[in-house]
Amino acid sequence: MAKYCEICGKGKISGHRITHSDKKIKRIWKPNVRRIKVMENGTPKKKFVCTRCIRSGKVERVI
Image 1 (cartoon, rainbow, N blue to C red):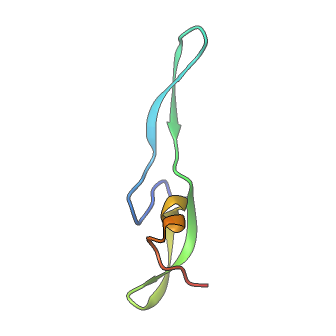
Image 2: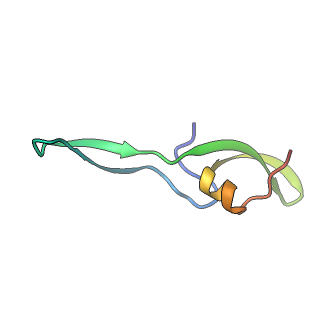
């Protein structure tokens, strides 16, 4: 799956998982991305879109 949203550009970010003993372990957070059909310039296209953009109506979905 794609690692970023093609609408808003949201991508993966990195940080640390911190244990009880205060150890820092590297980890990444990935966006919740889905491949959906989107209407673009009158033609349907498949794009990777995050669920936040789908829910907020930033894309016109084709069914």
